[in-house]
Length: 196
Length: 115
Image 1: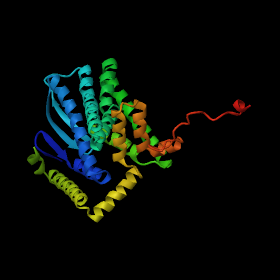
Image 2: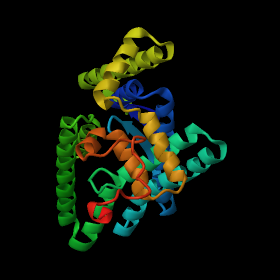
Image 3: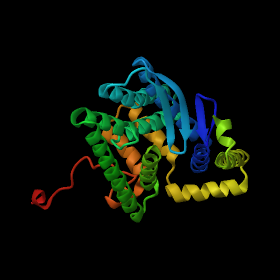
Image 4: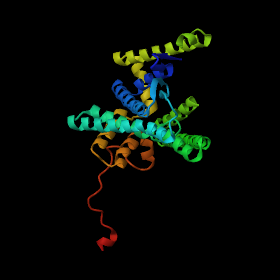
């Protein structure tokens, strides 16, 4: 079930995710992370707008935010890539600005926001299905080999990356590490399932 | 749209689930804000379970600082890698962030050099 206004909708899973993050991190980290996510999504929205589309709303779910674009026409594969890359670009820009803020005023919050935003940008560039990198891969593969084969390639890479991350996470855990990689693998596979 | 879906039995169940999720979040937020002991204990348990002894805030702040200083990307991401995944660097025989020993300025003399 999703509630909220027509433009901003949120699910129960989203609030559970916020609760767990609030327990695992602190309110300050959570707020800066929310700002980093907002700027990332605004980057996508700006690109959609520049290409003549409109964002009708945004849904906040337990596996991330999903934009609902309304397009007057179908985007080309190149435009799909541009929309997908606009989010990480916005995150890089925010990381740069926050870094300048941190350096100029010696602000720990500036460095924290820069780090979170940079990590968000890089993680989203991983070429796994639900992430921006995965959307770029799907669009590029579809451009060269057609949509069906593009979809198959994207699914194959996502599955391999999810399994690889899970295996690496287990290996890390055995060697005294933590659950970070396993959680990333779980999130990746959950989001892929949710999108399907 | 929401009215339409809540009028069905499935819709009402989902609405109840949504309210429970929202209430849970409210309880956690209030507990963290008021430093309630059970919530703090749950936070400690989750932090220990998820991140071992990783200080996420420090890791991301160090990464941001490294990025803003214009350090090479490999170094910046090594900060994140070794901070978030100490198990990987332990297994690879590396130290974690802040534990790296500086390289000696002069290499130790080899037996051949002594002779």
